[in-house]
Image (tube, rainbow, N blue to C red; front, side, top):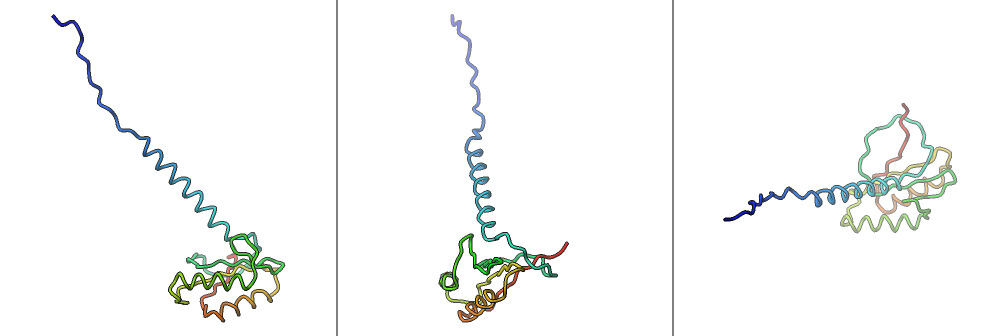
Length: 138
């Protein structure tokens, strides 16, 4: 005579540990991407003008502060450095200057010397798509 009870086999549920790992990886990815995209935007007082509110993708964002310093990605640069960055973008795009768009963000208190020199530098490299950023009122 057998006195032991039959064991009931429990079905194993779905393991959600990998799903939680993926959620945390996605969260870290989006936080990092958000921080990187904000480094291109320096704290500048842009001129208040009517302009388009849409943000099209740009190849390069150049900031010019009120002292006339050129800042790209949080780092101060010279015009020669901008020429080097444009050459790298040209290599990445197969030499097609039509695919490169440069957004220039200029503090409204800055003089026009640096922006003019920058635009001349871009024109000498064949870059024709230069957009000026403004702050759209209200």
